Structures are given as structure tokens and as C-alpha cells.
View 1 (cartoon, rainbow, N blue to C red):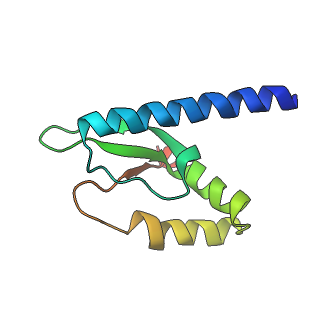
View 2 (tube, helix red, strand yellow):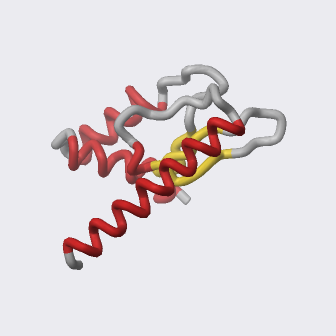
Amino acid sequence: MKLEDLRSIKMIMLVRTNEIRNMMEDENPEALFADGFDDAIIGICRKAGDSSVVAYSYEKCVEVLINQQEMSLEDAIEWMEFNVVSAYMGPHTPVFIDFESI
């Protein structure tokens, strides 16, 4: 893949992330975002009777930790489980979708 193609993909992801942030400002201004994981945002989780929250790809979050924090796969998974997934911050806490478990 060419560098120009990678830049285009990154730009599309950035635009999509900004769109989701803007949508969340309208739907749930109290929604929380996971710091450092913008590249892993996949959408919005809407549930009956609850506020909308940001949805992240669990696998992409692990990739972010491996690539940006130089963690091993095992360390990245442990970090995700202990510090991110288990960090309940109230009803506006994001969700993390694990596609490999499906």
C-alpha cells in the first residue's frame, strides 16, 4: 500500500471520529471517551432506556497499545482488561466490542 493511500485512510478515520464526537455532543454530551483510543472508535451504542455511549473496537484498542505504547500482546490485553474495560465511570462509560469472541 502506498503512503498516500495510508494518509487517505487516516484522514477518513479522523473525519469519522470527529463526526461521532459531534453526534455524541447532540445525543449525550456527558458521554465519555477513552483517552488515546480515537483510532479505535467504531460507532455509537444506543440502548433502550439508556443514554447513547461511544463504542470502541477492543482489538483496535489492543493494537493502539501495542503500536503506541510498545506493549506486548499479553501486556496490552492485561492493560485493557484492568485499566480500561473494568474502569466503570457511570452510565456514560464507553463500551468495548470484542469481535474475536463472536
